[in-house]
Length: 182
Image (cartoon, rainbow, N blue to C red; front, top):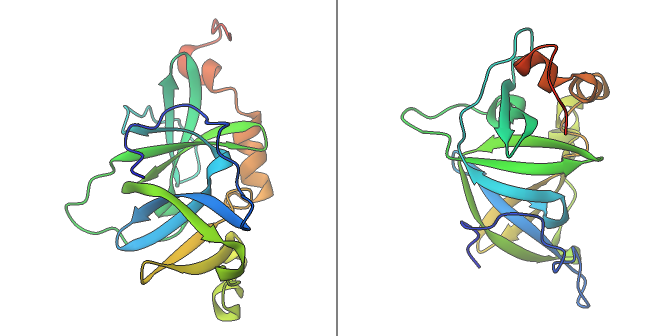
């Protein structure tokens, strides 16, 4: 099922069904295919104007105003240290709810909702997860003869980075001291 028009969190999906399958939102960066648990996806939008925030980590592109909510946006390509192809535009922002914090992640494309059997998901090879930076790989599986990397977005940000984003008052940074939070 294509999800180009998907907006809002859909409670009609469960991450598992009776056959032991989980549902993932598929997305891509370069030629690599990734997946995220559908229950984390709050919304998927086309690129929006991103306002830079001074002194942010390099992978934080800035913030967007999404219907009055100021949301930090992370360039997932930079966070995952993936090479950028020439002439490739960032087209999508995945809006995820991570531990009750809403964060946007820029990706190249969003593909489809996938059902993957739990028993088809293999742990990441030891050589891949040997580095601390790769602790966010939840597993890998074969989908339509392509390798899909399932990311654990709970671990995409290290603790200090997560708390930096969590503690930042982006409304105040963008709108000034007179910002009104809703």
